[in-house]
Every structure is written in C-alpha cells, then in structure tokens.
Image 1 (cartoon, rainbow, N blue to C red):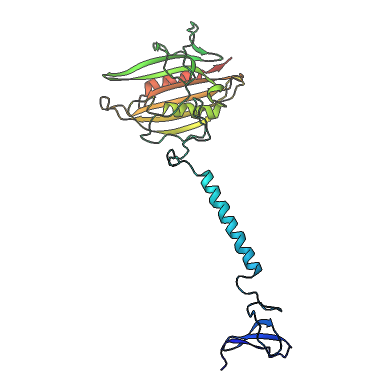
Image 2: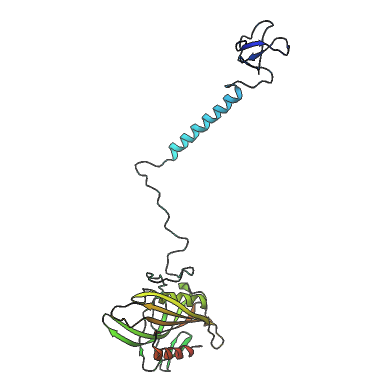
Length: 294
C-alpha cells in the first residue's frame, strides 16, 4: 500500500492533487504543476475542509483570547480589597418593618411560646364615672359590684377603665379576675374588629401577660353586635403552671372588639375568670352582655 502523501487526483482533474492518508483518499486537495506534487501541500483548495489553524479557526481563537482578557481585567478591577473584605452576611431584615405596629400575619402562640410582640402605643387610664359603668371613648360596660377600680397595664390598649377581683394571694404571685374597657388605635395596626380581637387575644395569651404561661386554646368566636354597631367576640382558655398556685389551671378570657364608628379607634371589652370559677364567670358574663356603644 502506498505511503501517505499527495498524489494526482484520481478523479482525473489536471493539475490537482489529493491527499492519501495511507489507507483511503481524503477530501483534501491542492493545486500543483502537472507531474509535480504541490510546493505548499497544506494550502488547500476546492471544497475540502479547512486545515486546523486556518483563517476562520484563527479568528475564533482570537476572539476567545480577547474575551478571556476582558474577563480577567474586569475581575481585577471589581474584586474587593483583600485587606478589607468580609464574608457576605445574610440579610436579617424582613419585608415587614420592625416597629410597634402589629403584624397581622403572625401565628397564634403555641404552648410554651416566648413573649409575643404586641403593639406598644402607650397605655393610659380612662376617666372614672359615677353612673355604674366603665367607659372608654364610645364603649362602656356595667361595673361589677364590689370589685375594685384598678387600671390594668396593657401597652396595646388606650384609655383603659377596669376593675379587678383578687382570687388568690400567694407570694410572689397573686391571681385575680378582670373586667374592663379601652380603645385600640388604628395607628397601632388594629384594622377591623375581627382581626383586632384575634390580635388582642394573642397579646393576652403569652408569657408577656401571664406568668407561667404554657399554652392557649380558642374556645369560640362569633359576631357581637350592639345597638347598630358591629363587633367580634373571641373566648379563649389560657393555661398556666405556677408552682405556688398549683390549684390554678388558667383563665377563661373574653375579648370583644366593637366598631364605634371612628376611623382611628375601636372599642374593646375584656375580662378574665379563673377556669372552674363559676361564680366569677357569671359576673364577667353579665358585664360582657351589658356592652353598649354610644
């Protein structure tokens, strides 16, 4: 078999040579004088494939070199100073501003939860009246006979007017029942009676308000309308475990939020009675049913 080399084209074309690879004829051809192999056998003509390193390939390789140089220069310019660089820290900021306004998308606290973030618009005492009713803005409820007037400390409720009744005294923790009215400000995130009642309930049902808090359960919730004003009532059982008050399981808590016709405030009534204390439960139930909106 003939060695690899340029031979006259077997198709008979005068002056054209074709490369034989030692086994088969290839598509590579070259021009030459009759009877003489081409002086530059690597210069190809005709429709044969271009040899590696030809014009088009050289252009592509050149473009790649330019791109690589540009990438390297860009990296050198933009890379951080190694002396001052720090590892990127994850963004700890949420899309919700961390202000005192209530986050309506927060979940109900589970058993053993920590402090619930409640609005802190600034608690303030309401005015005392002698007409037998607790009043705050346009909402009022009947006073409970023989209970003491005492303003509760709830930063998320404005203009509080309330009463308390001590149930157990045991240092360092005492236990009492409550009945009161106040106002919830739209500026603090309270938007409508139903949402506000849930928010208010969650503020109660937390270790922020109840020492020894272990969990809570919503017992019922329903519409609560009075003299043409709409409202929402939520009843919750809040559970505690207090070593010096082992007889106390927790409280039954009522929250009623009323639309008083104001754009900036809603009225709220709240009460609590110890779980199993039927006598005080009847008293706070009667006070709740006496709610009026003026």
